[in-house]
Image (cartoon, rainbow, N blue to C red; front, side, top):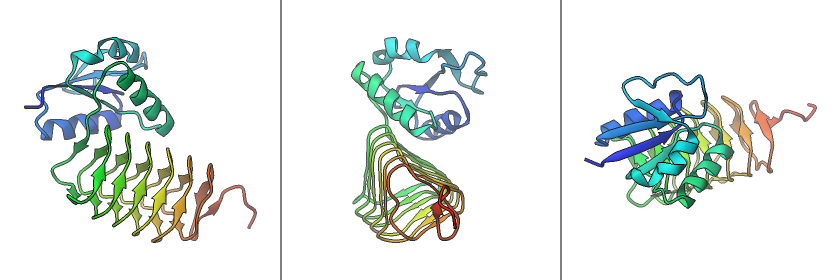
Length: 209
């Protein structure tokens, strides 16, 4: 129904994207991967490297970058877009996204995720299985919210930051760029750029308690 989709990155995350795309009616899904040891991604074709995709991206109706590392995902999306490609935004049929929320180009929203009214999700973001993005949250480009993580209302998350498995962020908190929030962490205060925080309440790993 939606034509040909290219996915850069043939690992587990890329295959979840492909499965989501199939549910949305994409009729042909083709993988590209720079790892010379990349295995055939299940029922889908592995057609070449990232350079091959860059050269042929306009042959596809759209592409998605299925790379989990946030900065690399952003860079690859920008490069493919500059080469004339069109990033696809994929929202799984079992996700719940308010019609009064915005999800940016190249972002993926997996099964069980909830995006509430007034939320803004930037480009090339991952909203993973069962995560919660509450009202009026603002996620910059390249953010990954892991499975089971939940953001309270009015949270802001800076570019390329990562919210770990099962983490919770209190309402109104601001998280900077390139922050890594550990699995199960509870963020109750603002976090500046570049921190890696763990625990309850979440603290910088380098800080002595």
